[in-house]
Amino acid sequence: MNNLKLVSLLALVYLFSCAASAQQKQTNSKKWTINQCVNHFSKEKTIPTKVGYQYWFVDKDFMNGRTLKMSVVAPHEATHPPHKHVEDEFFFVLEGTAKFYLNGDSVLCGPLTSMYCPSMVAHGISNAGNTELKYLVIKKYPKTKKGH
Image (cartoon, rainbow, N blue to C red):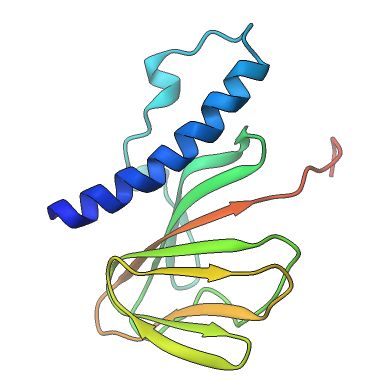
């Protein structure tokens, strides 16, 4: 990974660590261990999709609903068609060429590019290249009642 990618990734991790720090202040009774705070990528822990796989660096139960996952998409595929939802969302391309769709417009994006998806605006991302597309997704999921 080159230095610019590493710095960009560290900036994203910093944003999440700030959120985690705020949550930790609210739950000071919890004792954190290094094993709870470090997540090493493992191909064995990926979740297959129709067009590739996903890897959750931060799941919905960790930081008050905020998540960080990596999506990997095969060439010329998309995880799903453009859609919209209440939560805003943020994409960050690590590798490959993404076609980002937003409200009827689209643009090609390469590594180290971020894309913001506002709440209730139609958006989508697909792989426009001949290699795997790897991108991070940052999103906060709404709280759900137990059993839902």
